[in-house]
Length: 337
Image (cartoon, rainbow, N blue to C red; front, top):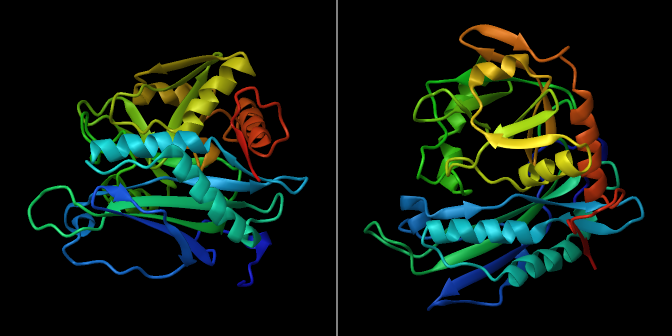
């Protein structure tokens, strides 16, 4: 095993030694196998390279204080992957096969799961059209790969407020497109806007709806939340917003644990300037507070500029469930045995 500095983990590739590979051919998936992590061979005419027929998921494995290994809602990732497969005309994966394949790989990569409190093991399942095709058609052969990498915080600085910039000149996804699934192309188009706002001194983009450039959609690769007067609002799922698993978890925790009113609705960009607290959510981001929002050259500090009290409590609650330290009334904690 390679030497890893557990005290200074970033959100970078530090791949575990083994990966899982399964192939789809002649109308069926094979049983798959665990192999050494490394390069894969693919034809230049593969559909994924020419027409972007590919999808991925983001998950994590955790080491608990008492030494157990756990995941968080893995079957929900399987369901979301399959929803995306159907949209992109790709064969679905049996949910049990998906989860059990990850479990098997976790067991051989166990040494790469960071010690308790030092980070997480990021899990990346990807499925793509590896078969050849010249015309614009679905592939007839597919590859499913799972690889893993120990990671620290997605945003540098840990649980500190990030600074975001609202942009009207770039949009993440239109209605009725592929914004509601984790299609690989969704993320390629986000690279340039992120580069622009980074150059301006901000951490990420707040995207607005593609139709009117008025309503909040997402924060780069994370879902958006606004707390105001006991109401926790998040953009409604209209087909252009990813149905985040962390997003869904936060909505339930807000209602059941903290007595807040969760509301999925259209949120005007200028509403958020006077919010009590703002944060974004995702597998990588977990719950990340937002301290400042800029638009058209004007900056708006949220609250006193520090992480909000409710945001921190919700983060602690979510992490507590993920690590088996808080009551799990939902059955989200999944122990790998």
